[in-house]
Image (tube, rainbow, N blue to C red; front, side, top):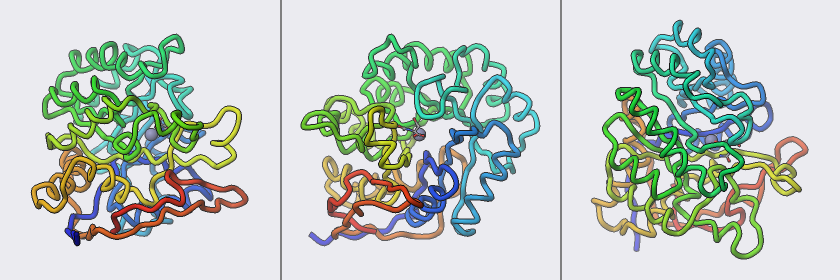
Length: 346
Ligand code: NCD
Ligand code: ZN
């Protein structure tokens, strides 16, 4: 079977670049496979202000070179009002990210009282700025496997009712409930899905020894949930797109007593997505190649109201070996499926 097809160079609508030596390593991995990425603001010193986003943007472009477009995001707090009052569409900031307080890495400054950020959402609705949501309740009393479904019922419904025109991306969705919500929503609601949530359910992480490099937030769910995500991609709504949530943490910070949440996938992201989609799509059919093209390259730009990349990339059957590790100064970074081989290459 000798399949090869071309797609416009994809967009990664959700990525973590970090800073310093880690940024130097991971930005080129993303820029190799993606023409554009939406960059998350949860640095240890979060990106609250437009000025911070400008200087972080410069650090990224200094490493990637000019061919790559970084869409910056602001970390939502009640104070975002003053920043967004100054915002214009030409700014490098293209969206605002909402973290529930305590839900994930560097989310201490996240939202604990939804109504306190309503004035921000009001401005965003008027100025047509997308809201990117980490959709989990962060109440420690709620089971970690239920935190996303609870958010859909308790938080998301409330925001959508109150701000019906606000453009929202439900980031890294992982459950049947979130998939159904997105499927039934209107044109202003989109979603990203990571490669890991399309590839596997929680058995891969917990079923046979504990595999920390599959651990991320939201945590991998059941088989039925993964099936619902794959179904959503196959049903080709036009509002669901690649967002890797590639989130590098050093080996020491993953393989320890209290390991960090985050999967590193940027080095082989497109091959991982193809491997996952191949489980439900026969890529000998051109129509199915079209589904991959829209998911990887077209739906993200469409949602962000920008043009699709003019640069083309060829995806073909062939072997890709995922590296065992990368050096980050004196530390080590382990990618997901390290040392394994995939049946697709770009
Ligand atoms: C992300 C990180 O490490 O910054 N971790 C993760 O597990 N996905 C934060 C996030 O997107 O939740
Ligand atoms: Zn993320």
